[in-house]
Structures are given as C-alpha cells and as structure tokens.
Length: 120
Length: 106
Image (cartoon, rainbow over all chains, first blue to last red; front, top):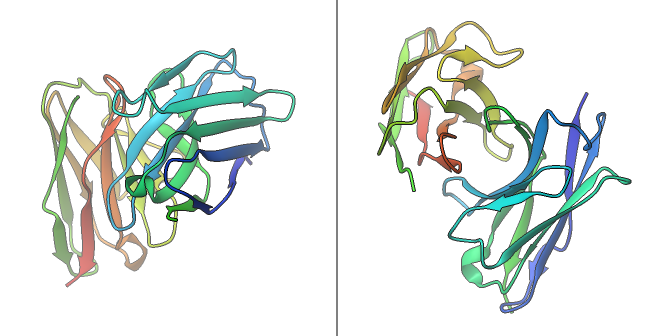
C-alpha cells in the first residue's frame, strides 16, 4: 500500500527557507501515471495547492507562490522535496505531500501532514 | 484563478438523514471536479473524482453529480463517521479548492 511521509523542521524563522521532504514507500516515484505535489493548510483554514512535479523533472506551481517555491525529486530514494523562500508568518501551515493523477490531477493519496510554524 | 465556492459553510444533520453539499466554480471546469473528506487532525481523503466517480473503497452512500460550474456531493444516509469537513477541488486548470463544508451532528 502506498504511503507518503513528510519530514523537516517544524519551526522556521521569518525570511529563511522552509525545506520539506516527502518519502514515498510501497510504490515507485518513477511512474508515468502520477505527479507528486505539495498542498498546505493554514490552521483552521482551507487547502492551497503549492506545486507539483513529474518524475522526469517538469514542475508547475500555483502562480501566487511560483516566485518562492521550488520542487525537486530524487528518484533513487523515492523522495521529492519542497523549498519555499523567503517565508513569513503567513506561510505557517500544515504541509501535505500527495500523489496526483497524471490524467485528471486530483490527489488520491496523501501524507499525514507536518505543521511548519514561521516565527522568530 | 478559478474560485470554488462551497455552501453551506456548516450543515447540521441528524444521523441517518440525507446531506446535500454544493460547490460552485467561477467558470466552467467541465467534469474536472473532486471531493475530499477531512477529519480533525487527518489528511484529506479522496471521495469522488471526475465529478461522479467514487474513489477506491468509498461507500456507495457517497455520490457526486454536476458539470460545468455547479456540483453536488450527496451522502444518502449520514453515518457517525461521516461527520467531517468536505472540500471540493477543480483541476481544469491549476488546482484550487473550495473553502469547505462542515457536516456536524444536529
């Protein structure tokens, strides 16, 4: 069964870089059937898609975050990563990684999420 | 950006009753619409994609309908485990989510 697990610091200082990694197990990240994405949810609020990546390296982002976000992939480790810089308090959220259908772009498998707080 | 608007914000329903949740898109998204369920402290779970196709393992009491700009999620008979927040998401262009509908016990 496919599992995704986010990891990374839970506290980041303003103006610095948020870095998270998603480890995929129970399946390969090198598949043509899926993309791999990041979604966030500020406490008590709704969901916001950040960006997604295809295993060959192509990426696409939410226009509102495009200038600050980067996604990379390590197929040898079945991992993909998010970097967001610079961060402000408004970036405080639970960050989820998820598998995204290549055909229809819905998210069919999610990690448990990790809370990242931006504070000095 | 395609804006997704869900209504109502909160739906008070008694167990066993039918629940109807609405999602409206600011422009047509065809059938490129998904529904998710989220319980406190958990990640969202995919319920419906393609506006009306149930995801693997989703009970038949969940059904989706609509196309274009108007969509509906119906839960035919609410069970205790169905009280949660429900989000819609369009993927006609880059993905955007609705603000959610909370189904609470009446």
